Amino acid sequence: MLEVLYFAWVRERIGEPRERIETTAATVADLVDELRGREGRYALAFSDLAALRVAIDQELADWDSPIEGAREVAFFPPMTGG
Image (cartoon, rainbow, N blue to C red):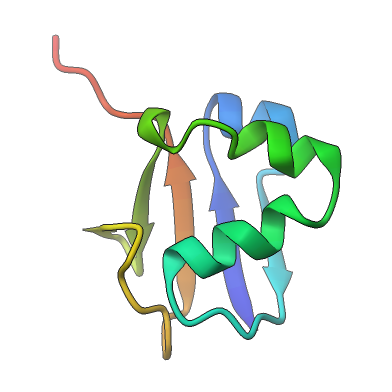
């Protein structure tokens, strides 16, 4: 099982802060494709990947990063300094 975490407006669009899922995805991009295919709310949340960042097990990652063996994947908007 993979823990998927959603933060900020991603969480608002999906309507949940986290969920545990079974996935056959090999990469983050594959996972996003699976999630987009679930329901419209996921398609909306992942409609603009340029507006999102991802972390695997609390380490920043790229869309083509493998997720095999990961415990969690988190999606969030870019952080701003200030």
